[in-house]
Image 1 (tube, protein in one colour):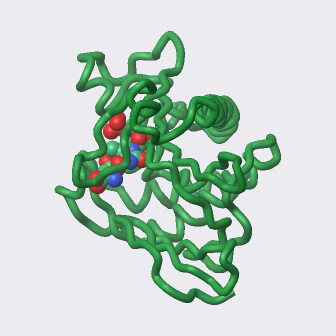
Image 2: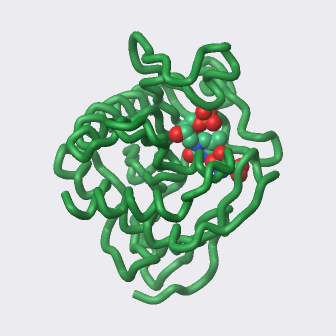
Image 3: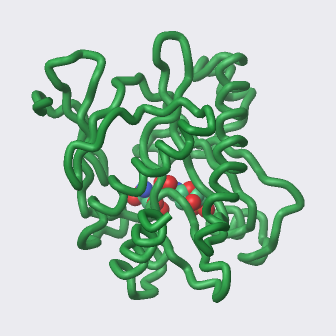
Length: 235
Ligand code: TMP
Ligand code: ASP
């Protein structure tokens, strides 16, 4: 399958049309941004890590009954996916306080939450991806009640499956963001699941193994992306 036209270019990926209108090719870049594009950089090898890791995770989730956009890995940076219409929401689950949650609520990073939280942000770069609640999502007709139910179910199941999986490779899943798309009246998992979109802490040492190393200038950025890929591809 060949790339035809560039359909969309985001901060970390390009999406191309193909000769089949039901399929897109996603191409992962090494560029990284943080704080709504304020901080910019390159993480060498990130495109390959995020592509391969996301694909492994999609395959794992499919085995557990979660429908995803994944079709076929084409090469180290490119994947054939189902053409979905993305629901413009960032769906965030947290198990442990960190990042914007710690800041917003004044809760120390690392505080284990009594139960996982489910949050939505509106995907809109110009507005800085503001947080949005379910009544606002419904009022703005961003998703239907039935779709919101499905989205919450998918996010919760992904959290259960991935928390257990990452635990087996010595990683605590602190929080993550997913995106979903519409396909033939259904809602399926789309976009990536990678060190860009999750917080991973080493179970034994607490070391951060994700994009927070870039966001917070902690060093060893490339190394931890490779480390996560190694752990995922070994298991
Ligand atoms: P936050 O604590 O900054 O709100 O991030 C929560 C989770 O969402 C974290 O795992 C990182 C991920 N995330 C993205 O995937 N994209 C984003 O633009 C942001 C801000 C966070
Ligand atoms: N994707 C976000 C941005 O540049 C950053 C992040 O992951 O924190 O805006």
